[in-house]
View (cartoon, rainbow over the protein chains, first blue to last red):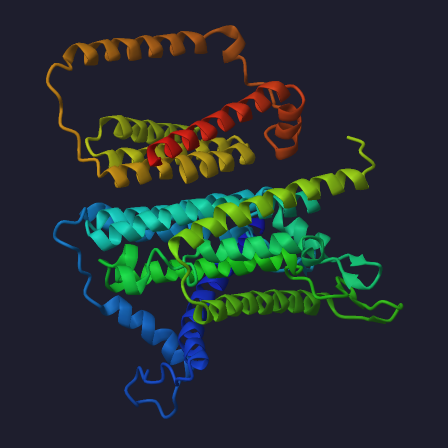
Length: 367
Length: 163
């Protein structure tokens, strides 16, 4: 039974992420059109008018990937064929693994079974995310090198430097969160945010670690290599940067990796700072509003509401990232490095030290 | 046990590729592969913390820097140099000695009797941290000073070249 539950959880976590990629693809195209006062993608009609109704956004969901997978796969003559093939794969597989440790609900109670809604319960889930995100850089390095093109190479070098730089700030922001909650398990962190401050305000991470939120969000956006930090693929300078020489399904995989990174950043922000799956005042046996007012909610409905709350928060922070991407111009390279090393890194360090001192002070300096 | 042998073979294959491949980029990638296999061996031993740290630090940061340097310098696949034979032979003899030494060590009573169960929480974050910040406090802090010296040295050398 346990094995089946784990299998279902893994599939659900995987499907949530794949779904995010498809929805984000559509949101990116339609959202950018909305921002730029255009109509956007509206000519997708897959069955050529055979259906009596238009499938709407489902068309766009399917049309873009289907088109990509049918394009010719072109490999440059001087490319390293094997690494050219390997780069998109090593770029995306580690990112797919991250959602295994993101909790998408508290517990699902089915008869005698209590299922923890987190695919992999390792106890050190945050480290797994950091490890896998840092592995994602190999896709950029290899894509840039194996294409044997100047544009790809420049994009690859830029991408590597950028991702290594911002990983440090990202890690420091996460260290402050880990210090606050005293655990490396994302489910534990989400649970801890169910408590109330002064009996009214939900004890979400954003109230404890506002600075870490800002650092994590900026560093996360830089990790995902999107505007205003899209120097590795800067269209106006490098054609498409490290994936200039990619076409068809391989290029599609690189784009997917971008969207998965957006989803990962949104998942981290949601879980660390906005309560993860928590709905304010909702507990396993229903709502308990401050002032003693209670509403009973059946357990299954509670779990459903938590999952919906998690997905809504996830979508919201994905949308914020897309909004930023289409609103801000690209930064210069020196500005990028200045922001990473001279602003975010010292701020992150200070945040960690202050957090540690405060925690010690609250414990009365007893070790 | 089956898992261990599969992992061991893959690890050694990766390590051999690292050393033997002519193209430095492939060598670096084989190194990443090897480090990953070692991390999975740690996972199989329930040492989650060490496994993930292995990936974050070595595979995720250090080898990326190797690749970065290889790319920047545009290192070409290595051609075998003439007159390396004595070096190769002596390296081979040293490696053979190391293998013999390790094989002898592993038969010593203190090491071959390691099958007893590990203490509760072994390899978990809290246990590692407690050891690191009590028994190994001084070496740990000294290591960070060493790293700081390296960073300062790098900055000094970069500055000198610029001026």
